[in-house]
Image (cartoon, rainbow, N blue to C red; front, side, top):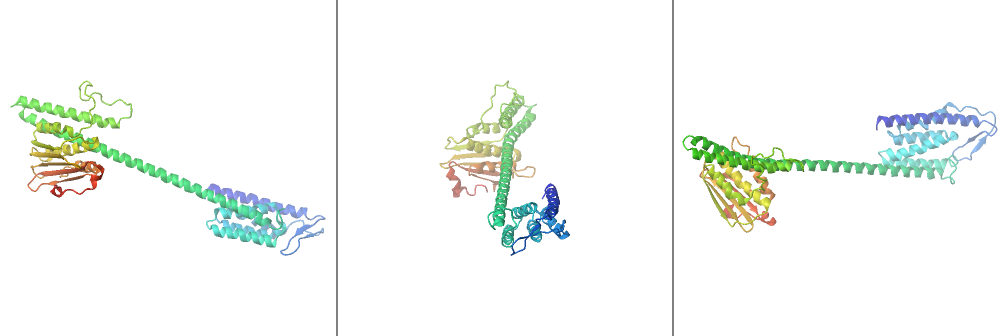
Length: 425
């Protein structure tokens, strides 16, 4: 309970206590005239006791009882059942001095017991038992209501209202909790989506930058070595460096275009220096494998390409297959130098099977000095389409990478053919 609510309860109890004591004093003094005061005893007929000998001030025990009919309201939300019981005992003890303030305090305490007590059944039984006792023992002490069932007719509706408010508060709290959980789940989903998108963009950036920069490094090294002895060969190598750089810039512009706000101008206009004539090209696919192989051959890597049963593929799947070959060639350049490399692409009825292997030394995408990001990214790409990726050293030296990508939704559950189960060894 908040400090403000606690202070409010104390203030209400203090005001009500003062009012209850004053009301009893006023009642006693105004009742000492010729009409006397009303005296009620359990099981007896109420009688008026006239006479001038009646004291004009109530005795101290009555004043204390009047105070106790309202003072426990200060603890009505901390000890609701206890506060109600104390008030009821005080009301019974001062039954000859019942006032409207006392009656209101009983109703308020009954409502609090039903609305705030953590022991709901105990509170209801306590209020019902008190109502029955008051109805049986003091039939004529309540305000004018039908017959002797005034206490029941007042306390039970009060409890009903308290229960209704309690249920409403509980449902409101449950709704607020559901809303909080929904907001938390939405934020978590948003964070996961952002993380996945960042990972995808990081993978794309890795593929684009690593491959083209690797080609540029090899070509630049070749140009440096033959610059004096063979200027024409050096010129060709530098042209290849320029072409790889333009390709890298074009693909980077594609990726950065995904990050730029809608309608925003692309930063760094004309990065390729072509005067704006080179428009953004579409994402690469297997149709550009030949061009990729030619660029790698120009970098000095001997590559053999074999394609069987070529046909059109969905754009996303074709991009994933292109990245597999691109990453494999990149890692040959990085880790195996100019080792002879073979690429085999088979368009099977239900799957696309890709094999890239070289005869170089023991090289790996996760070798010391490398972070394995390319292999992890490739596995994630292939897994999106229900495929599998295996990579590992060959028994005779070199490295082998195989990828199996289903070409229909159900193909991802089919077993790997026996002749390809050992492809990664």
